[in-house]
Length: 587
Image 1 (cartoon, helix red, strand yellow):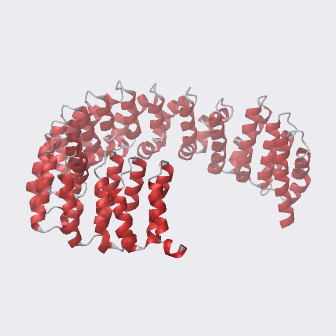
Image 2 (cartoon, one colour; image 1 turned 90 degrees about the horizontal axis):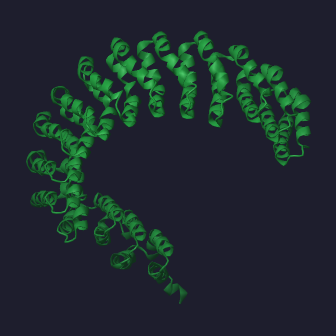
Image 3 (cartoon, one colour; image 1 turned 135 degrees about the horizontal axis):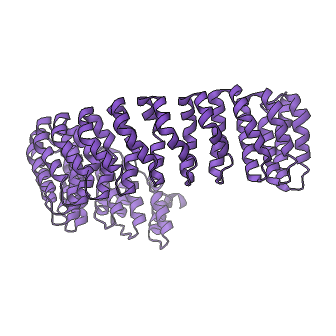
C-alpha cells in the first residue's frame, strides 16, 4: 500500500504546506519544488504540479517571489524545452500581482524560458501571453508586458511583428505613467531586435513621444534610451534624431532629467561621435556644470575627466577648465568632493604645462578644503599628477599641504595620508623622505586613534621593504624601539605590533641582536595585555630566528609567561610554547 501511495505523498505534503498558515513552511515548500518535481516525474509535474501552482492564490509576496524564481529554472523538470509552454500560465498570473519585485522576477523568469522555447511555441504561446498582458485591465499586467517584447519579436512572423510594434506604441501612450515608464525602460532592448527600416520610423516616433512626456519620471528614462538607440543608429541618423533630444534634455525644466543627462553624457558622446560632441555637446555640458541644482553639478563634475578625454586639450582648457575652477569653490561640499575624486585624472589629458599653470592651484585649494572628504579624494589620486609634472615640482607645491594634512584633526584624513606614504616614499626617494616625512611616521605611532597607530605600524614595515634593512636599521628601528618605554600601555602594544611586522623584513641577525632583547624585556611589563602580546610576538619570531635562540631565549621566557596569574597571558604563552615544541620536533 505504501508503495502505491508514495508518488502521491510529495504533492500531498506540498499542498498541505502551501496552505499552512506559517509563511516559513510555505516558503520552504516552494524552495523544494525541484525536489518534488523530480519525485513526481515529468508528466505528473506538467499535469498536477504546474496547474496547482497556477491556481495557488497565496497572498504573501515572499512566497510568490520564491515561486517566480523557481519556475524560471523549471524547464528540465517538465520534460525539456518542448514542454516549456506549460510554465507560462503560473508566471503570467505572477506578472499581474501588485508587488513590483514579484513582477520583475516573473518577467526575468519568462525571458529565461522564452529564450529556450522553440520558434513555433513562441508564436503559439508566448506572443498571445504578451498580447493578454498588454491588454490587461489592471496596469500591473501592462507594466510586465513591456519587458517581454524583445524575446518574442525576432521569432515572430511579419504580421505579428507589425502588431507587436503597434502594441508597444500603445503602451508608450498608456494613461498610466507606470506603464509608460516601463515602456521607456525597455525600449532599448526592444529596439535592438527591430529591423533597421522600422527602427528609423516606428521606434523613433515612439521614442520622440516618450521624450515629450509630461511626466519627468518618463523623460528621465528616455535619456537612457538616447544612449541605447544611438548605438543602433547610423552616425548621421544619430546626429539628426538623438542629438537634438540630448541638447533639449540638458535644458529640461526638471532637474532629475538634467541630472540623468549629466550622468549619461559620456555614453551619449560616444553615440554621436567626436565632431558633434565638440560643436553641440560641449555647450550642453558647460550648462550642466553651471546648473543651479547641486545634484546636477555633482553628476556633471564626476564625469569631467572622462569628458575631457573625448576633447582635444585646447577645447578642454578653453571651455571646461573655467567651469572646473568655479566648481573648486562651489558652495556645496558634495560638488567639490565629486570634482576632487576625478580632477587628478585631468593632468594626463591636459599635459604638463597646463597642469602646472591651471590645475596645480586648484589641487592646492582642494587640499586645503574644510571638508575632509574633498581632501581625501585629492590625496588618494596624487600619483596621477606625479606622472605628469615630476617629483620636484610635486614636492615643492604639494608636500607642504601633505605635511599639514598628516596632522589633520579628522583621523580618516590622517589615515589616507599614511596609506599614501609608501607610494610617496618610493617616488620621492630616500634623501627627500628622511628630511621631510621620517619624523611624521614616528609621530603616527603615538596617535590617539587605534586605526592610525595600526596603519603606522604597517607603514613602518612597508618603508623598511621599500628602502631596505640597512636604511631601516639606521632610521626606523632605533626610534621604534625607543618608544617601548612609553608610559601608556596602548602605545607599548603598538610598538610590539610594529616589531612583529619589522622582524621578517630585517632578517634573523638584526632580530636577534636588536628586536628580541626588547621583546623579552617587555615580558616583565606589569600590564597583562602587554605580556600576552609579547607571547604572540615571540610566536611570530620562532620561524625567523635560529633554533638555538628559540631554546635559550624564547622558550624560557614563554615558560615563565605560561605560569602568569592572568588567564589570557597563560593561554597565549601555552599556544606559543606548542609552536616551539613543533619546531623542535620537526628539526
